[in-house]
Structure formats: C-alpha cells, structure tokens
Length: 554
Image (cartoon, rainbow, N blue to C red):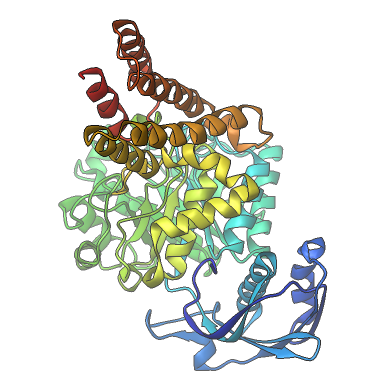
C-alpha cells in the first residue's frame, strides 16, 4: 500500500525490488542523493536503481486542476525495467517537488515494492499540518524534531507551535525567551525549512493584554522581533479560551465594550507590523469564537473587519467536530470573506478527554473539503509518540482525500510506526479507537462478543468457549508482552494497558462461568467488573460490559 495514496497512477505491474545501488543524474542530483543518503543501509542486496531527474516549469508540473491552484509539490515518476534493474524518470518543477518525489522513492524502497508505469502525484489540500496546541506538558525538543521529519516525509507542510503550557507562549507572553529556549525554536524553524514545512510561532496574549495600551502592543512587537531575528516568519495570534468580556475600563471605552472590536484592532495592527517588517510574513488568528455555524455575529464581524491577508482558525460546528462538511465551509467563507483554516481537534485528548487515548484514525471529513478551505491543521496529544499513528492517517487524507479509507490507513500507520511489533499492540489499539469521531471502537472485541453470544445461545457451548478463548489468548499476549517490551510508546500507553489487564481478567472470569456458574464464580466476576468500571481510563466498547452482565444474569 502506497502511503499516502498516489493521485493519478497508471501502473501496469508491481515488482518486489530492493536496490543495492542507486545512481542519480540530472537536475539537483546532489541534493536528491543527499536525501537518499539518509536511507543508506536500509537497501538490501538487489539490482541497481537509476534515477534521472528532469526539471520542467509547465502547467502539468505547476498547477493542480482539481484544487484550482498553483503548486510547488507536483511531480511525475515513470518507472521501467532495464537490463540490470529499474530506471526512474522523475520530473519536477523545483527542489520542493523533488523533495516530495524522493521521499516517495524512499518509501517504495523501504517496502521493497516498485511499480512499472507512470504516476502523476500531488497533494489536494494546500495546507496540511499539525499544531502542538494542547493543554499539558509540552513535547520535548527531541520529539518535536522527530515529528517534523516524520510528518514532512509523509507529506505535511505546516507546523504550528502553540503549546498552552509553554509559559512564554501564553502566561508570560510579554516576556522574551531565554537563550536556551530561543535557540531551540530557531533550530526547529531551520529544520522546518530544510523539510519544506512552514513553521508558525503562535502567541496567546488574551488573558492579560490591554488592547488599548501601546505599551502592551510594544511588548508584543518586541517578542515578534526576537523570533523574527532567529528566522521565524509565520506567526499566529491566539485569542481563544479567554473571557468573552473586556476586562479593562480603557478597553471598554476604546472598543465600545465589545471584544470583537478589540480583536479586529489588534489583529490588523499586528499584521501591518509584520508586513512592514517583511512582506513574506504571515499571520493566522484563532478567534474568541472558534466553532459554531460560522455566520454568528462575532466571527462574521471579525472576518469582515480584519485584513484579507489573515487566515482564521475554525474547528467546525463543535470544538471537537464529528464531521466537517463543505456546506459548513461555504457558510463560513460567505460570512468572513475567506475560506476557513481548520484547527481540527483530533487527535488531541486534553481537558475533559484526558482519560481517552486517541490512537485511531481521522474520519468524518468530506473528501472535497480541499476545494473550500485553506487546509487542515490537526491538534495533537500531549503524548507525542502515540500521536504519530493518528497523524499519519491525517497525512493520508490530506494528500489524497478521494482515495482515503480510514481503517485501512490506520492499519498502515500502525505498521509504519510499530513494524514487527504491530500485531502485539493491535488488541490494545483496537480498544483505543474511541474519540470524538464517528469511529466504531473495539471492532475485534465486538466481533468476538457477538459471535460468542450467538454460539452460546444457539447451544454451541464449545464454539463460544473457543471464540472467547482465542480473543483472550491474543489479549494475554498483548498485555504480557507490552509490560516487558522496550518500545518508547509503552510508557505513554501504560494507564490504558493497566485497564486492558483488568479487561483480560474480566474476560477470563466471565469465560469460566460458561462451565462453572457457581455463586462463588459469579461473585468474583462481578467484583472484577466493578474494578474494571471504576478504572477512570476509557477503553473498550460498551459491549464488554454488556457481555459480562448478560453472562451474570444466566
């Protein structure tokens, strides 16, 4: 499975092929070789791979017809057999499209699968990214670097830095960064440029800023100057999760008592400053009202009042929207004079969702949303390593939403992240598909329970025992192996693994009732059920509880 899916493949054959040597010629070949150099030792013994790179600045390489926009990310790869291997002709318009194409080649080499034919490939969404915008412990610098490289490899091009609990982002917004923290941001910004990802630094002054104060605005400017001087050119102004009413009497007087007027003034002043500093600077605003129908008073007035150069974040109908539709996007654009840039609150699990672990897949976003939005930026979890799986499904959707299948994409994402350990993790991950999205949780468990009940009540006792026993065996292998496995995701998953162990004990006890329905066994099963239900973490579909309760009533 190519990941993300190719846009326009004309493929006649797939080959099992692992190049032992790669020869590159043509446009920017040294740069391409440098990227492939990171692939290095992953190549196994096999035949030779020839790569000829051609630069072409024409419509077919620079314009995406479906999205009606220019693009620097289109490429064409033609692959054919030759005497001692394969020859690829890679046609690109610039270094950025070459970067995307070479990453595709690396992905095929890693899978040891190459095609014969031609692929015309490009992303449909213009903005494809993620935002570190959660409440909770911010990611480590090492995890930020890891995530940037991974997400850019699979096609993302945008990263918003906005961790709520970075004190210099929100609580201490008016203070300059200390040298160590500033150096880390500068390194992230440079790494983004190397990987063709736009780095956006977000600042959230709304809890304490006096909008009518020139002194406070100067503090904002000083902060932006500090960040500009280390190479940051894209900024975000976050005015979300703050009081709806103005605090200061001076602000009430200056802005007729309405926060929207203050936010229009601040957004335009900040945008004007950035554009005067550098015309290439950009600004994104997250408004006080960031979800709803999209044509309410605040968001309509803000959108029509601020510069058209400013993007506006929007989460959809709800804070965590089950679905995001074209119709909703059109309403927003008509009201605000610009298409929405979606801040998609998936897979984030902060606030009231902190007992959930969202390692499932993106769902409920219409396939042609790319025509009516600036793009989608997914809000991540505090758990960086576990966020990789759902974010890869986001990569898949954003590149080619027309061919996106959430469940299949999730399976491939698990394979990419977990490798040979995938099957050990799957019983746990199957029970962690729960989220705000319309995704069935615990499909493996549900299938087991439904089949076992059908067998039991039709008189096939041994069949029911075998069905539940097979699931218990997989669950037991998962629990016991993960407890000793040296995988960095395991500590993040530990609280849910504890509950999974309770689920295992519960199923074992319930299974024993099939052959020994004594009062003692029933009491023990009921006790384990209460321990399971009292554990705060969210795990498994309701079917497990319903199954056990039904067995207890027999």
